[in-house]
Amino acid sequence: MKALNSLNISGNEVLPLVEGGKGISATNGASSGAWAAAGGVGTVSCVNADNFDENGNVIPQIYHGKTRTERHAELIQYGIDGGVRQVKDAHDVSNGQGRIHINVLWEMGGAEPVLEGILNETKGLVHGITCGAGMPYKLSEIAANHKVFFHPIISSARAFGILWKRAYKNYGEWLGGVVYEDPWLAGGHNGLSNAEDPLEPQDPYPRVAALRALMNKFGLDHVPIIMAGGVWFLRDWEHWFDNPEIGLIAFQYGTRPLLTKESPIPQGWKDRLTGLQEGDITLHRFSPTGFYSSAVRNNLLRALEGRSVRQVDFRRKAGVDELFNTEVAIGRKKYFVKEDDRSKVLNWVDQGFNTSMRTPDDSLILVTAEDAGSIRLDQKNCMGCLSQCKFSNWSENPDTNYSTGRGADPRSFCIQKALMNIAHGESLEDNLMFAGHTAFNFASDPFYSNGFVPTVKELMKRIATGD
Image (cartoon, rainbow, N blue to C red):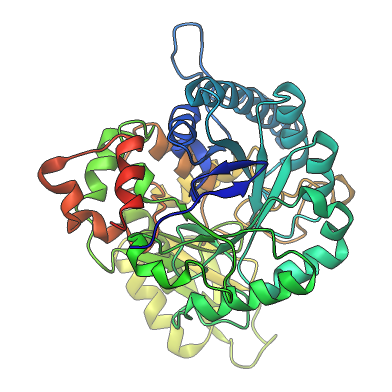
């Protein structure tokens, strides 16, 4: 394989290998600091980052507020405190090598105050910010004010063009890189547009070449593109090296660093990675963000699939719509459905799915009474972890009375709970296990044979060989 040349990223020459941020507690100061110490770019996840007490134990994020707005304020403070702690840890572990980035999601609850709070308390320790999951127009201004580089995460040249023209061109000297996150291959939330088919993946090469052509048009030929999603063996990407159509290129790894000694995820999660098979990762749209996302198809996702299958349109009264004049009773509630749907509903009730829940789209889903109780409790306990949440109908906009204006959607789930649980040792089957679509390679890659788990340094050395 061709030599892996260093690049100037966020103000310093480093290996063109970037650690992906990976959301809640799946990347921390230890893992990102080790990645930077090995000469690359480590990325601290500042999405509800863990904080520790004086004994080194994780401080549980327990919410005491009686209202969502009170709990939302607690969430923001937890995010700032945990992010500051993780950044300081990463700085210490890095020994001044590489670069330290922080990662936030623009659609997470309190993104701006969390970002500002962390940067205010870690001056000189953070070199760059990566940010996606939305259109983060203010990212460039915040980064420039703190004199750190910004690295927007986008999934198309069009998205970057909009961001550049509307905001980023005013702070162009602080653009450190553009992360192209492949919407069909990356783990976590993906940026598929309504015009793109989730079942028909596109080759990333022409999409990245189009991004480079647009960047060059803006005079950004000196700014690297960071390819994220689907990157496992660098030898498969060798034709991108020194390629004028692609230009300066680095590669981001989100999934492979999960299986390292420094990775903070629980041992059970690490063990599960080595048994994944091709097809175990699914691209779904159950996330309360409304975005597509990629995760291991476990009991949680199967349960969500089942909720949507056990769904019928309904009307509250007869005569409103001539197609909906067939009455059906579910417990003490009566609805009017299409004639063909009545037998479906009664069959689901016979199977034990005897509780109805309304969706914002004039439909019903049928669930067990136990599941209905759990869904309602999660909705009640909402702490505003997203800027807008379709599961709980929370919005952080006070002008709308902190509501999306739509009903809470029981076809979704509490993503904060599902991610915090799995990151701290709870069930792998009943929580959300994000993973990229190449995660099945753990089972066949000889590097991991006989249960070998590398250090971050050993992994980066292996990646640099092409394998």
